[in-house]
Amino acid sequence: MSGSRVPLFQRLRQWTGGGLLAAPGGDVLPVRLGATRLASTGTAPMRAQGFDQPLFWVTVALLLWGLVMVYSASIALPENPRFAQYTPTFFLVRHTLWLGIAFVGALLAYQVPLSTWEKVAPWLFVASLVLLALVLVPGIGKKVYGARRWISVGPLSFQPSELVKFTVLLYAANYMVRKMDVKERFLRAVLPMGMAVAVVGVLLLAEPDMGAFMVIAVIAMGILFLGGVNARMFFLIVAVLLVAFSTMIATSEFRRERIFAYLDPWSETNALAKGYQLTHSLIAIGRGEIFGVGLGGSVEKLNWLPEAHTDFLLAVIGEEFGLVGVILVIGLFLWMVRRMMYIGRQAIALERVFAGLVAQGVAVWMGFQAFINMGVNLGALPTKGLTLPLMSYGGSAILINLAAIAVVLRIDQENRTLMHGGRV
Image (cartoon, rainbow, N blue to C red):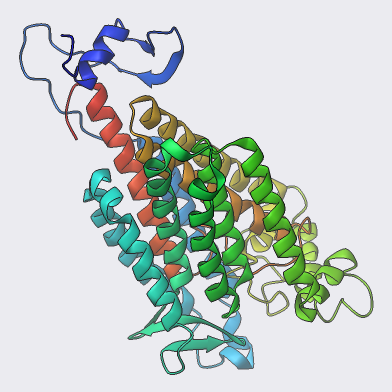
């Protein structure tokens, strides 16, 4: 068959006797054909069905646990004069409504082939930049606690920065596939992507939302690294970002105060000011000890710990479920990240580089944001307004997170189809 292209599934059959795939050079690839084999009778190969069930159920477990904890953490909020007009079930109902919307969005995202995502990635990125700019327009953007980050959509609010996390991921994966032949050259391979992230950064810092910018920068950096950018260029970019973030903190009095409060939260100056959230988060986790005080038994959620149902949900989990609950949450996220990375490796082994980078990019996103949120709640990192993925209250985040996970499940489904001789 010299001069003709051998179909992928035929090469897979040549490389393996039905078990773990081995490349012609002898390297083991992270792909298994599973129990179903291609028939030797010459009949058309069957299309594989299904997706990664464990990843699906771990996601469902985090969503349901988060729903229960959002209700537990917000049930006492109406006792606060600021929330006197709300009912005890206000946040529960809204969170449930967003879960329903997110489930529909995830189903739609799952139906889209990865080839389509790859084609529309640049246009989705541009559209998300337009939404990010509209947030800054008075009368369109909604201002809360001094930050303009939301656009009102009827009775609900949408946060474009959450969408940008997903579109930057798609754009970066698409960009790396297109630039594979020049990835060793800094100006042609990295600088255009750096400019795109810089534009996002300018818009996000104008809101301001430094936390979202950090996550987006890490997503882009992660995909550049996984895409095979030269190590020297990668560390140069890391150095530039560290200098940039250090400069942002040094030139902002508000951010400097947060750093000082993190370093000494119990001082007389900080305990009732910038260190207030951190001290009460640590008190909540300390009260939980090993096994917690029981579901619903948190004291800190009784208007002592601000944003208990959003940024500091893990502190309430720590108080009500103790160290065991915190370790379980960490374990679920670690397993989820590991599984997504594995699905990405499968896709790359099947020569689907865009799909592989997307799956691994989602893993970097979920893992990094969860790490930052947990670090803040446990006092290991300075306070930063990032929610716990899939669990904290926040409709936009739930919607985009579920859509991203649905795309990863689609990647796994397409991997299985290819490994069983089907087409995608």
